[in-house]
Length: 214
Image (cartoon, rainbow, N blue to C red):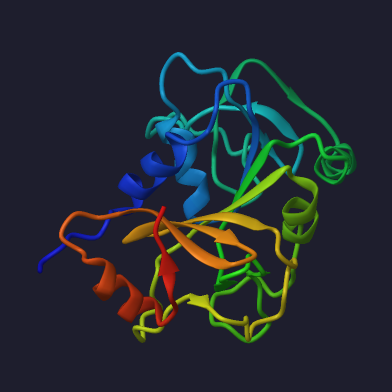
């Protein structure tokens, strides 16, 4: 059977549709920042950035960038009415104090039970330190991961046990990928949804792990 992968924007839109009204959300560096551009209209979702912003808006239109107004990944952002700036120590107090409903992070690997590995000193182009990801993964009420399912070498990023340095243990609740969405549970992976045309057997073959259905 033939199937089409979700584009990065389609994946960001898929993540955004699961964020409930009124949630306070941190979007990690990389792909997760795209989620800000796909928040459904009419919802009050408050975006927090670990460098000290609350009430972050979508990316600015070309030519309207203010490089004094950036997110933690140094990308220009906008500020919604009522938004605020503050010291990053206060931002980390929010993160560690359980004041975030959801964080959306990228990852190198996620285990079937929800262990997270999203930093490395040896990966080309990787951020060579854990940064705020450890605080986010443990401090947020829910940790979601947004990533491609496979590496460029065709290996699954969903694994039985992580081989990269761990960011957090059993902290990931959901994994959103370009081919399918998964829940991480103590019993292993459960399928939430998948792209049209991809069979369950094909998906299990790509991941290399059993995937329960709802």
